[in-house]
Image 1: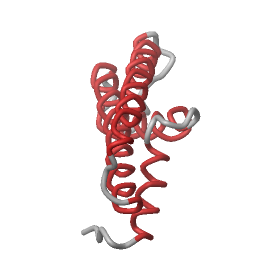
Image 2: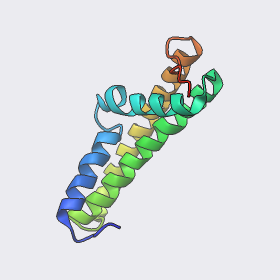
Image 3: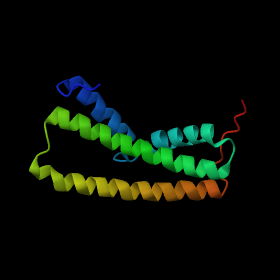
Length: 123
C-alpha cells in the first residue's frame, strides 16, 4: 500500500501522524478526544461503562496510529534510523505515553462524574 520511495506519502504520513500523536499540546483536546468520544458514543449504545472503555481504547489507538504514521513516514522521508536518534526518540515516546496516561485518567474521571456523556443516538 505505501511506497517507501515516495516523499509525498512520507510527508503526508508524518503530518497526519503528528496531528494524531500527543506530541502537540493542542491535539488531544481538538482531535483525539473528540474522535474518541464520537466513535465510543456510536459504539456505546448509551452505556456509561462502554463509553469509558471505548473513549480510552479509541484515544490510545489514535495516539498509537499517530506514532506509527510518524515512524513510517519519517523513516521513509529521512532514511533509516540513525544511531544518534534512538535515545531522543525513546524519551519522546515515554513522555508522550505518560501524558496519554494522564489524559486518559482525566477523561475517565470526567465521564464517571457525568461531565462527559455519550451521545443519545437512536437508530
